[in-house]
Amino acid sequence: MTSDISGAKVSKGVYEPFKNNGLFYIPLKGPHAGKAHLIATTPIDAEFTGPTFSPDGSTLFLSVQHPGELTKDPKNPTSRWPNGTLPQPTVVAITGGFLKSPSTKQKI
Image 1 (cartoon, helix red, strand yellow):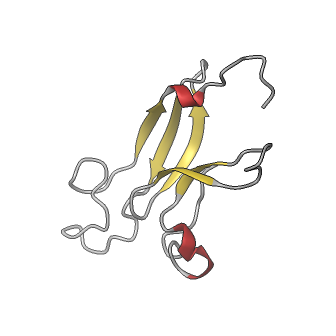
Image 2 (cartoon, rainbow, N blue to C red):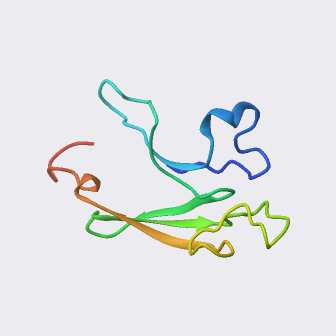
Image 3 (cartoon, rainbow, N blue to C red):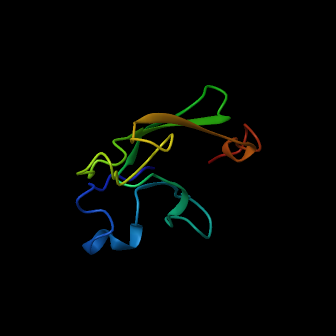
């Protein structure tokens, strides 16, 4: 799952423990069922949207939406994602064997 805490509220009040928005894995079974595990964090003032797996399950695509949204002065942005200049939305791809189930017969 991805979180969507507004830029004005992220890291404040009840949202303070979360820091930036992020991508989380929450097991449904086993000793860690129901506990959120942080996989990736967003750039400052951003959120992940539209998490989508490739058909073979080996790649997770995420949109990075409105990084640096709280910037008031373009000469001093709150984020420089993704290329070190002015912030821009983009799509990232996360790959790795951890995204695939070890067996297609395994019940998840």
